[in-house]
Length: 96
Ligand code: SF4
Image (cartoon, rainbow, N blue to C red; front, side):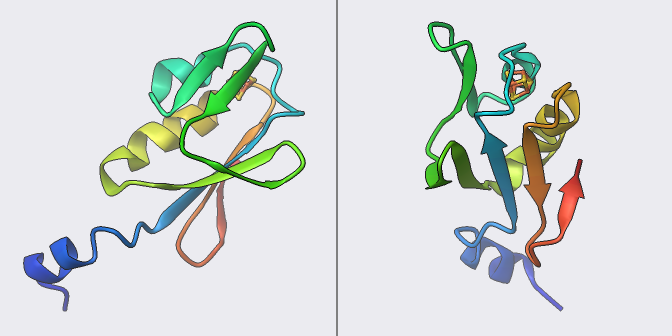
């Protein structure tokens, strides 16, 4: 069983990942209100996922810190066009 010390020691190994598809995003900015990793790019009419890596054209991925998992899930659920996907540590898609 993992102890508190183990959990702290592995704090850098975030379990959850978020994927943001900029092409799908229609700039309604619900996600911005849910998780501060999402910012408004008003000139482009798109959200920006801070500290993310562009893994393919227009698709951005980053890890979700332990203390932001709820916010990330709310952001994904708030998106009306499912531009935000959440994956667990096994790569299984949780949302949408
Ligand atoms: S809620 Fe969805 S559509 Fe709206 S800005 Fe965020 S990612 Fe884009």
